[in-house]
Image (spheres, rainbow, N blue to C red):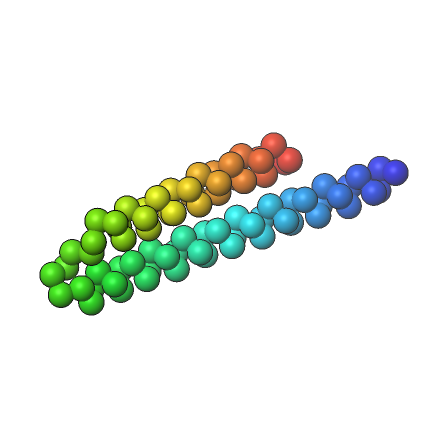
Length: 76
């Protein structure tokens, strides 16, 4: 029984770490795409709607990332 709990805990830690890595990678890609879009924009200004949507998306994702990190710390 204890062995089963250990395996479950290990699997949960791996899942959380995988999710953290996935979200960090996604945030990096979104920021990189936004940077490229800014470089290609003629007036160097993206629409306010585009910028606010991207930053809102990143903020939500990073908030969830912070929760995952806190959850991971509780498991250690």
